[in-house]
Length: 69
Image 1 (cartoon, helix red, strand yellow):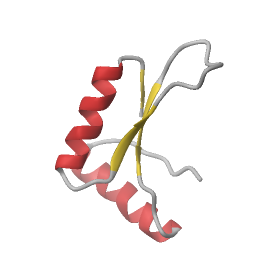
Image 2 (cartoon, one colour):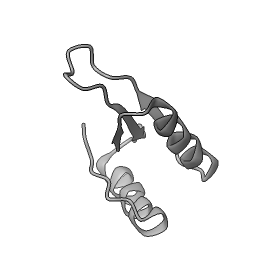
Image 3 (cartoon, one colour):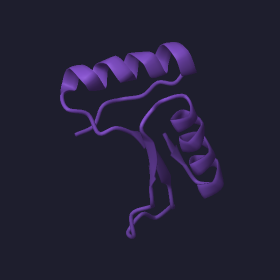
């Protein structure tokens, strides 16, 4: 998830952590024309773990996450 408001991004990450996910916020890239705070979940030991958590985020949180390397 990418959000412009840092407080909203941090609240989202904290909520996911409270539910047992390993979530954190990436600060905006310095050359971004618009600042986005990216909420990420991970890291994972392999793709199978990432897929399992992606599916859980979809089912339990109604999110549409995607996997990045």
